[in-house]
Length: 270
Image: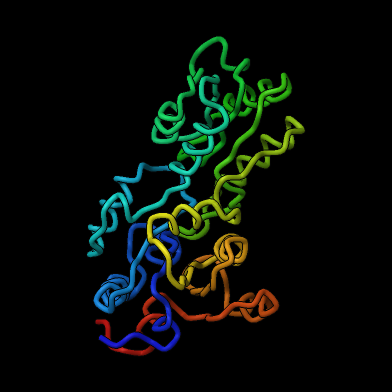
């Protein structure tokens, strides 16, 4: 299957998952076929996500479930990037984690001891904020107390929302806003729009001309710019066509209705 002229010049492609490859539990229309076409054309592909809720293996399983073959080396999660940062800067410290069990495992793997559930939780050296399925107000209280005592603050992103099949749902940034407002602290951000996720993906892909594809101007396109990469925006997630038109000053190379239309440019993918 021939690729569009918009992607053919590139050696490799970095694909955002939420809002680009899938929305909720469903693939965006034609996404598996588009990814298969990229690989058949010899393009290297990596997947990135600002979603901190699940482990890398969970995202690999989801890719397989929608018909996309992938391994753990193909997927770069913000949880893994946070683990690397904490290992480099906070190993041996104590932590209080607002996040899922997966994020707590990343924190432990970085060499930190999580104090969640202990009487010393408010005395943690660092507070780590990530997305959660359910938020306990007591977590905000403990995080606030720890930060007001001088703890450091690390967060996976400032994403206000993430796309679901039922519409936008509050993201990590919504939780972080409450923590920062209550404590007066400012977080170190690991995920997009910072360039670390794309930098990690580039380490895995190797050298070559790279196109980053995502659905968010403030996260995906901004992170691509920070990493010095060309960017493409798809309209299946967090950005409207009107917003994309208004953002022309950002230097977007391509805007497409979906990943499939970006890659296949009208070719049949049914």
